[in-house]
Image (tube, rainbow, N blue to C red; front, side, top):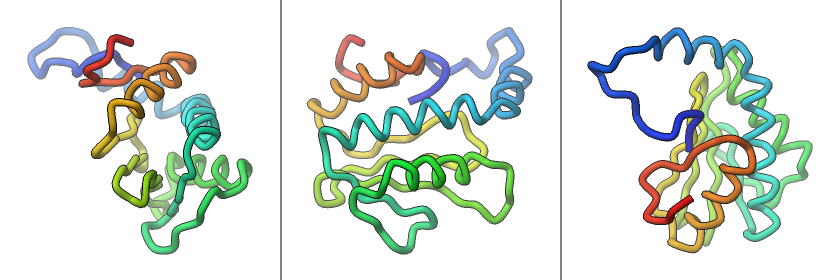
Length: 133
């Protein structure tokens, strides 16, 4: 899931890195989008969330999710990735520190359909989906 609809080619024109830095400086806007997606996803699935990859919390309070996403996307060097697990940890979503994207591992078709809709509702894009968003 990303701010762009597809990967930017290595030899492409434009100013990808400057645009990426622009969005990273306005990370609170991006945090809000990912928080909204995770909260809506939690309406359909139980989620387990880990802020540092250690302890997992089942269905944390919305405020906790918001706090952890914000911390994960902050520029504080002590913060790490946010891990979100679904379906007995067979599906994993990872939001990395200082990045504009969320990586989704081992998604089902059902989840891809839902994530496509949720991403679109927040102005984000789901890559490599077999679904037509």
